[in-house]
Length: 167
Image (spheres, rainbow, N blue to C red):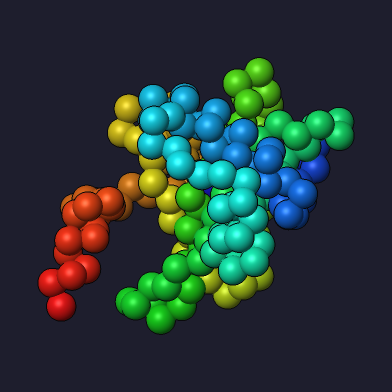
């Protein structure tokens, strides 16, 4: 991919602050609705404040166009045992439907790549629904590669509780 800097007039990206918890929750719900998973959202403003800002469990970027928020990128750091370096993990990237196609998502993803480099991460990773062909096409056009032969597993609720009691 050719390296070209693209400035979007009127668009800025900033780190989220505690005062953004309600906005972040709104974007989480909007994203979950888009993905037909709204019933899975249990996040609240107090939980976000505690786990993002008090405990430092995740961070977010807020994209603003002409002073109004238009999207967010929610991320955390994991670790690559193979690289023996941190990995910047993008949890969610969401741009409001009316603001899509203007380069805001690309700009936020590029900002995350910059943060990954600043923090000496060995890579940046994220998940995408297999039905989200538009996103997949963008990611591939921007140089991302799909990881082959890996499936995501998840354990929650009673299964997690029961399994934790086995030891």
